[in-house]
Amino acid sequence: MTEVPKTKKTSARGKVTKTTKSSSLTQQAYEAIKEKVINLYFLPGQYLNEAAICELLGLGRTPVHQALQRLQSEGLIDVVPRKGIIVQPDSISQIIEFLKARLTVETEIARLAAEHAHPDDVAELKAILDSQGRLQNHGGEINAFVECDHAFHIKICDMSRSRVLGDFAKSLHERCSRSWYLHLWQTLDRDASEKQHRAILKAIKSRDGEGAAAAMRDHLTNLCERVTKVHHTTSRSGQSLPPVARTGRTGKPID
Image (cartoon, rainbow, N blue to C red; front, side, top):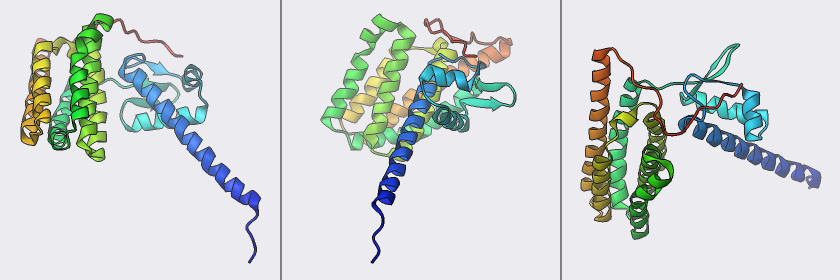
């Protein structure tokens, strides 16, 4: 039997390594750009230049281009012929749609998280809520709330052990996280959110699946009602919400 030349085996392994490295760089570019969009480093309506993004991230054109394609499919950016890449804004009506989708998905996720709850996970969930006061002293009320809220909901997604539902919920929550900086800061009720988060934690700790689902439903329904109220108020008055909360975050031009 004829042996396969060793050089070809090495070449095959090399191709796998190259592909893996390329995928890793694309994921790195995707996560970095997405974070800058969500945190308003890149502002809604801002035009971006692919070459400038490469320079900013210290990455080549291929991973950045592939990352931008993925972000376009998720609706965070859009490629405009002869103009470049534009960061897409989210309207209040879109935000309400995201919240309604979260209401459906995260209710089930909370139930699953309670059923699979482990003491270490519950302790971490509590630590996240306890950290908000410390974070506020360092980054301001909105920044502290968004960071804590995001970590809390993402941890519950991980505890659910449902990768499909979890990934979907994480994507929806990321879109809503950006919305806090854009519009939702006017609806912030820290005391209500704190009470609702603690109710979710209590049910998960007790491994009460139905109780956790009900607490999550109450939490997201309350938020959706507050956003809807602001939306109706501004629609009737013909006014628009101030676009960005005063959090110290500023958009960076990237031409």
